[in-house]
Image (cartoon, rainbow, N blue to C red):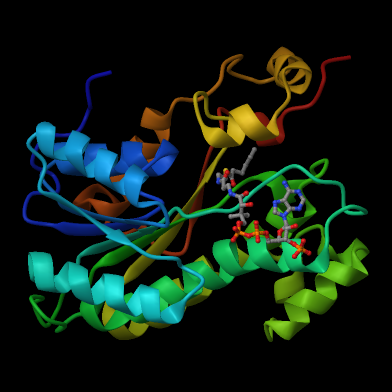
Length: 295
Ligand code: HXC
């Protein structure tokens, strides 16, 4: 589908995307590149990165891939610094890396739970933390008045509860945690306050960084919570067909979203169109989160 944005809205910008080599992350990489940005993508699998970079470059996009795991602070630091070395500056960070699998809470081991928390929540914070010195106003390659921006990819799972997704619900949001002592104990290990337990972990990171870094450094921090997006690992792996078909029966827009929809939301948030938007998590789910069966 043709973009409603001008092709140069991100001209001269440099973006780093974790999980930017596949799925929704790759579509965001592609659309950022098509709108003028230089794109660095970070991921764990070299073959995925190589193929993504090849595709981006064949579209005329300045792209580079850096292998790394967001769970390792040294990887986060190295990839951010490699991006600076390669492109000279950093304007945009998108945290799209996510771990996920369907498993009942009973069968989920504490280490499995911790693994997803480490990728989705701690990994998001680590990347933000390592990128800050380059994103803040007055940072390398930046003016003294203008900071960069961050987009954290979240989810809507925590708004209610989701079957076999306790680890992701907790990692993306902590809304369902009060009834899960085990999950709460893990969150306390991360020094989250009891107030944060009522919020999403990633969404809480988004709001708190928006407050601190927006005020001090002119860095805008926002999130996107995608609903069911077609042709993604999340949908293929996590949503069985019978649930998928049932869901469609009461979705307000009666259709799955496209990766493009999330990329356009990201473009809006990081471009000047979103220059007064800070601390919000934009739900892009066709209204699914407000829906219920018609009686
Ligand atoms: C139960 C599992 C498991 C599974 C891993 N574990 N996979 N438990 N069911 N399918 C447990 C392991 O038993 C282990 O605990 C712990 O997790 C760590 O597993 P490892 O395989 O050693 O870790 P690692 O190699 O680092 O990989 C972990 C992972 C990977 C990244 C989470 O398993 C994975 O799922 N990758 C796919 C990522 C993905 O699909 N991303 C798209 C997300 S889409 P023990 O106790 O045995 O040591 C998304 C959208 C959400 O998030 C919205 C959907 C609607």
